[in-house]
Amino acid sequence: MRLSAKTEYAAIAAVELARHWEADEPVRIRSICKAQGVPERFLVHILLELKNAGIVTSTRGAGGGYQLSRPPRELTLEDIHRAIQGPGDGAAPVTTDLASRSRVAAVLAGAWGDAAHAETESLRSITLADLADRCRSASEAMYYI
Amino acid sequence: MRLSAKTEYAAIAAVELARHWEADEPVRIRSICKAQGVPERFLVHILLELKNAGIVTSTRGAGGGYQLSRPPRELTLEDIHRAIQGPGDGAAPVTTDLASRSRVAAVLAGAWGDAAHAETESLRSITLADLADRCRSASEAMYYI
DNA sequence: TCGATAGTTGACAAACGTGGTCAGGATTGA
DNA sequence: TCAATCCTGACCACGTTTGTCAACTATCGA
Image (cartoon, rainbow over all chains, first blue to last red; front, side, top):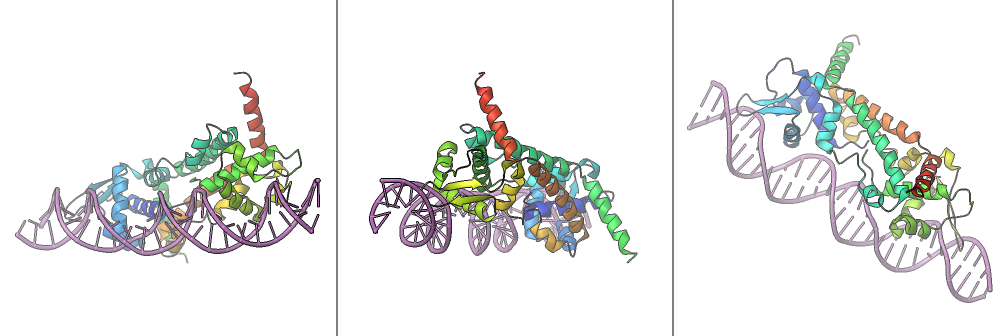
């Protein structure tokens, strides 16, 4: 479960968009960066990847910005993870080479796959709506401190 | 679940040692490499890491080699994974920085942690004995083809 | 004691991935 | 037209990964 900064930033941005889902107007990159402390030039590329993956849509020009392409309830952390880290993550690179000539490697490939599957399922169980809700509860809890 | 070649090689070597556990004599690096197609000079360093992690023991000199330090039933894939990829894998590097000033990042850290935990538990459920057994069944199945 | 065998250790390097930055272009609203 | 905003590709610095090489040390058997 090694997480790249890119994936983390992508998830942060996605949750931020989920929090603005109801307003139904584009969110600017700059406002995300300002709120979350993410390097702006970098987030440009990340959001572009999310757009190419069909997770967000963009509106160009003045007053433009980004929005989720679907309701936050229908988007999971796994979607984000797959969009950024790529689908070539569950399959082991070297093992697939070795698996053809080594039984041990083949058996291991199955085991690694099981673990990858467990991770994927865990991520798939968490929607952006869940995360946005948790942020809301967390901020409400703050008032009691 | 990104897997480094190093971790894969380590697991292959560990399973190979598990298959020779009952013989109770050291296995040479060269014989592992010959059987599994792993670069020999590289496996040297990998086995050294496994040794420092207390997973294997070594016997120097002529007739020397490596053996598992404990019965294969007591060693899991997670042990191998942790020994090579390091324990600094479940914790997200950037998030821990951001988590302090961003609620979103903090909430996300929890979610990533859950997924990492699911992966770890999956790996922990597979022992080297399991894998050695699977290799044995796989090779027996070959006779029927 | 000698020599072969095998693990130990550290230095090194090429290739790759990661994490950004920069400049300029395209689009849109006012 | 002008300003705001996204789009795109090039670029680069840095660390990690994946090895290789060479020299050293320990052990066994003759």
